[in-house]
Each structure stands twice: as C-alpha cells, then as structure tokens.
Amino acid sequence: MSICKLPFFGFFGIGGVLLVGVVWAIGLRNVAPDAVTKATEGYNFYTGDLAYLTDGKTPDNDESPGIFQWGNKGLLVFELSEPVAISEVRVCVGDNPAWYIVTFFLGAKLGPDGQSQDPEGEQKGIVENFDFLTHQWVSLKPESPVVADYVQLETMNGPEMYEVEIWVEDETTPVRPSSWGLVKSRFKP
Image 1 (cartoon, one colour):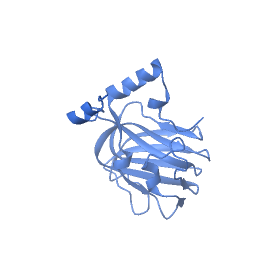
Image 2 (cartoon, rainbow, N blue to C red):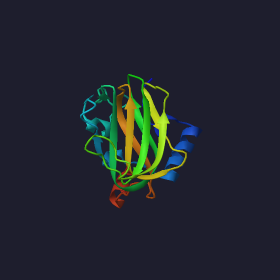
Image 3 (cartoon, helix red, strand yellow):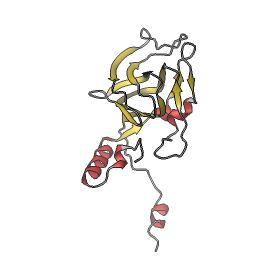
C-alpha cells in the first residue's frame, strides 16, 4: 500500500464522490508552492533541499522523491504574498516519528537569529500534533480557517519530510478554462 495519498483521490465509491464534491464546492487550493520558503539556519542543520517540500513528489507518485530532514529540530517558514484563509497544513512524512507545531501569523518576518518575530506580527492561531506518525500525511488543521500570511512549521526529532501543503479557501472555481476547439477535439470519433 502506498503512503501519502491525497484523500480527495484515494477514495472511490459514494464516499469518494461526496468528498470530491465537498472539495469542489469549498474550492481548496494548495499555496505552499507559491510561498517563499525558509529554514532556520545557524542553530539547526538539515539535509536535502527546501524545494523538495513543494515539488509535489511523494513516495506515492515518485520512485525517489527528495527528502528534507532536520538533524533534530528546526523551523520552516512559508511567507505568502497576501493574507489567506488557511484551512489545513499537511506534511507528508517518512521515517523518524516526530511532533509538529504550526503557528499562523499576520505580518511576521523571519528574524536574523532564525526565529519568527512575534513583535513584528500578530499570532492568529496555533495547531499541535504529538501523534509521532510515520509514512503518512500529518494533518494540522485549525478548528476554523485562520487568516494569515506567514506559516511557521516547527518540528522536533528530525522527521523525514517529502512534501508540505498549505490548503486555503479559494473563491475561484477549480474547473480550468478550455478553448472551444479543445473541447470539440475531445469528442472526435
């Protein structure tokens, strides 16, 4: 059985159709690839590349996805270009069980000491996960969407991380526009 399947596509039948319908109706969008991603440096070390965390590659869809891993603990920050309503942060993890804390800020910046600066931004919410999960998606979901433009992900125990997703409510339709010619070409005998 593969790990890190997206729940929207991993289920079929009535439940899967309903779940896909809910995702379509809500209009969720992953903004992690659009964020400026930074890692604390100086106090903590890591292996891998930050780009691995938002390249869409997990053990479920790639034979050798890149792994980002802290030596022990560390902070990742995702700076967004504008405030958005964040519904969930998900981390696809491999070996080394760990705990995770996500803190949502409005207007914060990463300081020169590698820590997020509370005085410069307002903390809007925090979600913790101490389940020490491996080989699956770890979900960090606030009770209700949190409006933020800066997401801080803190980990302890050096987990292997394949992907980070930041799901936001999106008012646009998930249906992609197509030209009339493309639509007609799909129905040729």
